[in-house]
Figure 1: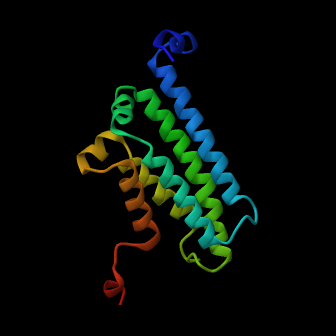
Figure 2: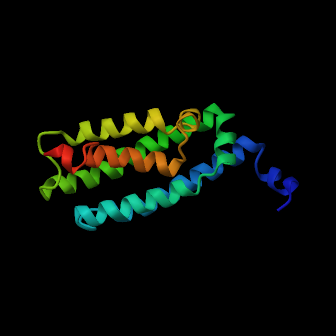
Length: 159
């Protein structure tokens, strides 16, 4: 498609990026909704599938895209808002399944787990911070999930 044709549908690069972001989040939401819908699967299967889908979507984010988002603060606010909604809706639903199955600690409220996850994601998963830490979206999100779900202690440290 030529630039002329593309800009006939979008007034500028920001509008094009916003449309692409919204489409991407809609695809992700649809996939995660199938996983976290009532009774779709057990906790461990659901967690594996959810993380696999999120990881696949974060792998698609490339440095040029991050550079463009860095230049458009409003687009990053859109990303943060949608990301927050996705985490609150789908991770909360899955953690509740895990709680019912006895696999998630009952002494830590699911709401607190979600807030810890959101806080870590918001602090780390932004273009300047990821660049500073030498992270990609995939490695950053994977690291956060690992720490939140497994902790930082290795088996020797847990003894």
